Image 1 (cartoon, rainbow, N blue to C red):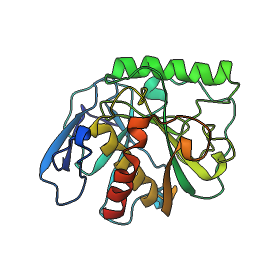
Image 2 (image 1 turned 135 degrees about the vertical axis):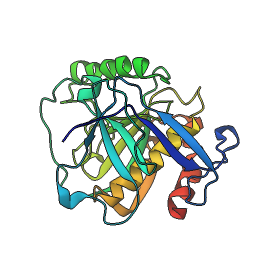
Image 3 (image 1 turned 60 degrees about the vertical axis):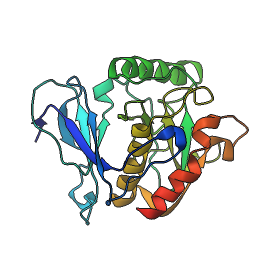
Length: 245
C-alpha cells in the first residue's frame, strides 16, 4: 500500500558540529534535527517486501521514498529516508548478483566529484555517476550500494543484498556507501554522517550487515585517496558512535 506524504523527519541528536568532530546520535540526545525530504521524493513505500525482514526491536525503521508529490505529515522520528532508484530515475541494471551472506565490511567512499546538498543537484549527479560507471567503466550498474548527499538524504544505488562494484576483491563481502563530493576539499556535513549511522543500524537490524561488521575507508583496502582526508579522519569517531549505540 502506497502512502503519499510530504516528509519532514525529526531525528533526536545532540548538538552536531562536524568541524570540531564533536557529534552524537544516541538516545540520550538533546536536540532535534529536521531532515527535509523534497516533495519530488515524497511518496513513501515500505522498503522491505518481506515481512520477516522487519526489525524485531523498537529501533530504526527504513522508509523508501519514491517519486510523487502530495502534502502529508511527518514520518516516525526513528526512521531513515532512502530515495529509491525510481525516485532518482536510475537506468535499469544490466545484471545483478545477490550477496550470499550479510556484509562483514562497510566501505566508505567519496565520489570525488561535486558536492551535492540539494535534491536537484543530487539527482543529476547520480545520473552522471551511473552513466560514467556503466558506459565508461563497463559496470552493470552504478557501483555503490548507497550514496549520501550533503543534506543527509540517502540514495539507493544497488541497494541492500546486491554485490557492488566499488572495491576490487572486497565487493562480495561488503557494502559500499559513497558521500557525494570531494572530501579532500570539503568537510562532510553532520547530517550526512548521522544518516550513515542510521543506515548502518538499519542494515544490521534487517540482517543485511553483520552485527560485528568493520567500518573502513576505501583507502584501507586499496591504493587510493578515497574517501578523502577530511572524511577519512572522521571514521574513528564514527566507529565510536556505532559501538555506543
